Image (cartoon, rainbow, N blue to C red; front, side):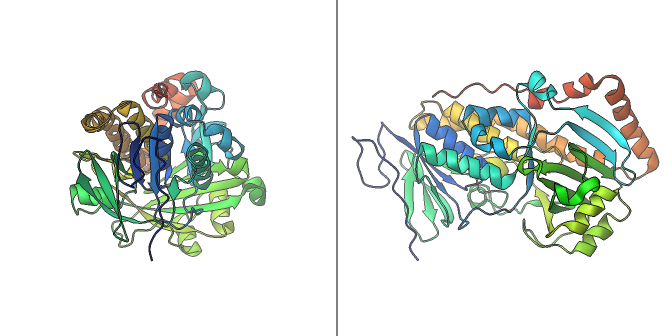
Length: 423
């Protein structure tokens, strides 16, 4: 079946033939309509680009679940005009907590409500992934109606004079000044650019569940971003949909995995066995969740490059990471925003140079987030009582005596400046 693509809008002096470019209008084709791809499209559009987003899924679904958007991400959403659409769906947690998974005993209570905005310039928020995608999509459509095409898989890309072109699954080719691969950890664009190596299994799989908060009653978890730590596993509870839903993520160590899927339905008894004897709020979520999802966690080592001429990788296609810093979505937002800023008014070969600068300026930060995410996972999975005491006693003491010092450890991440786009 042929796929209909709405032509990219052209200026009055440009040629109407699809694929021809002019000095008046720069064009970007974005493969992947997730958080990073949509953010990049919005930012580029705000800075004068014509954009088209190709999303292979026929429609945006509820796959995924809760996200935590730290101040470095919230500032970007505010700058690009998305927060006003997202506001009704967000939840602002009282604190970030760490508790023992079995006993529920507190290890750390770090206030965030009110503190985050004062210290880092924006709130710390929790939101459903589908709500964020909806808000980003609506903002893009307001800026350039029809810019996103769903049900439109991309097979690959090819270089061409002064740009690159995407190759759709039906064989059609569309040329532009810039192609962005924002198509996730299993990116076809990354595969073509850097080879056939598979993402590496991290030795962990995850459970996801959503339950109405009212349904849990007294067993609802605290109104925070709460990490429940335990031997070789941990859980995280958050709130989404303005506090109406409790989101659960449970990460469990396992040596091997043969499947890769966001949306594999899991077995309730298996999930309950994984968290047998853990705190009552966690068991109540697993018992009452209408659907449980189970999937393996994969990542990649930092890549040697994100670029092939006029083709650029972004988000999970460039730097997939474990969820134990809650930064996957936020780093994708940072990628899209930073790329648009670096591109500025670049045209022709200057686009290639700007993309190279983007990589040079982003690789250390994204690699550090990947590294600390892996370290956090180890911190939350301490097995012996001695290891737990050595790891958690200093955290408890710091939280009791000098919480500002604990906040300070996140300054490099949450407090990073977000200069305005060159609109």
